Each structure stands twice: as structure tokens, then as C-alpha cells.
Length: 326
Image (cartoon, rainbow, N blue to C red; front, side, top):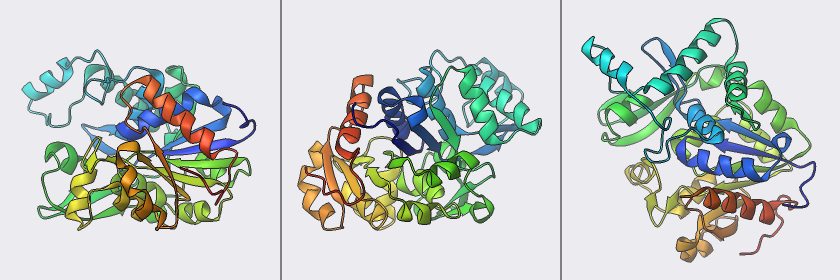
């Protein structure tokens, strides 16, 4: 890529889907140009350990140890500890593989030593040889609660134990009012070299909204000179991963890229949808956004790098309201 020297990119990511584009961006940008901020609303404490599913999905993808078949966790995983826990009567609905368990043990130990989550994440990334700057959205705990017809459920209970079966009516981010952006995240929001903010193809309600709900984040993005682009996690009316399409329907919205674009209207300057959804372009333009129609389904590393490169070629050095052409 040319013409981006000195410009910086901020990527906002959830788990598996966001991690794919984050990896692509890391392959076409220098480490000092890219900061990835991961959602921590999915975090929870389990068996005495601090579990950060979205941070870990991004971290494992960046380090090349992620399981691309399952879509989550570490490749070459084994489950002996989980099997032993089950024999001892422990809860085993949240599957902790043996290799994955090492991450949670080290994170919990370092947090117990007084390090912040940002410091712990930096240490883990360094140990895994990750050059890109990966940060939690906040060092203070935020916990996503899903309001359903089965009651208010912690996110992992809804997502993993209940397999997303309860009908969703709304969401609550417990603790978000007192959770400032992590220092590195705040510094990026204030960096005059920030040229592009990429909202990765993650669930808008439970992966991206927790980040945007942190004090001052949405206002900072709205006021920033950087272009904000959102990539649709919905292709052909279906979610590529996770319950986003189901949530859209249960919230009384269409399961479409247009509905996702409407969710980001007023914040995103541009919206990226898949080539298979090209007929939706006029409706999304009517929301006041520029539109990029690209190949967004990322199966291979080439797909991830290709989407990242296409985004950067189109949006840098362009700035806000640059009049992108499809």
C-alpha cells in the first residue's frame, strides 16, 4: 500500500469476525500505524479465572494460533482439564481447552499482581510475538447483559450455555458509565495522525455498542477528522458468525446489511457491504453514507488481506465526506 506513511488506523473489533479483518489490517499496515481495540463486554469470571473471549480471539488470530476450523480457541487443542473438572462436579458448559487455559491462568495471575488489563494484554501479545498494538476497550470491567424472555442473562450464559435460544429484547452494559476508555484507546482517539477508524464486521449490538458506549467514545469519533467506516457482519441476510441476524429480527428490524448501516447512521461516514448485496446500495446511500461494495467474506488469509487492502486503498488518504465512488 502506498500513500499512508504517518497515517494511523484504529480498528474496533469483537471476536471471530472482527479478528479476521484485524489480521488482514495487520498484514498491510506497519505495527506503529495500527491499533486494535477489542470489546471486553463479553468478559467474565469463570472458575476463578478472568476470561476475555474477544481479546483472545483477536490475539490468537494475530499470533496465528487460532483454530480456523472451530472458529474460536487455539488450534491443536485438547480437553483433559475440562474432562477432569467435569468428574469433579465443576461447571463445564464454557469449554476451556488446555492450551487456552494457559492464557487465562497467566492473565489472572498478572491481574492479581496489580497489572492493568492493558498491561496484561501487552505482555501476552509480546510473549506470542504480536507486533500490532492490541488493547482492551477499558481497563475497568464492563459486563454485557442480555434482556430476554427468559430473564436478564450475562452474555456468556446467553451465548454459550443457552446457545442464543432466548428471545432478545434489549441489552445493558453494566459498569460502562464508570469505565473510561483504556489509556491507549484514549490516546488514539486524540491522536492527530488518526486517519481512519474501522468498525470491523462484528455484532453491532454486543460487540461494537459496548465500545461506543464508553464515556466520551462516540462523541470523540463524531468530532474526529478521521473517516469512520463500518463493515457489515450481515451478508445476504445472514450473519457470517454468531446471533446478529437473529437479534436484528427479534428487535423488529430486517436481517440485512441495510439494518446494520442504519444502526451506525450518524457515526459512520462510509459503509462496506458484500458484493452479493449490491442491490442495497441506494438504500444505504439514502442514510447519508458513502458505500463500498467489496468481497467481505473472509475464508482465507488472502481474503482477509484483500479486504483490508481494498479498504485502505479506498479510504486513505481520503478524509471525512470524501465522496467515495462504488
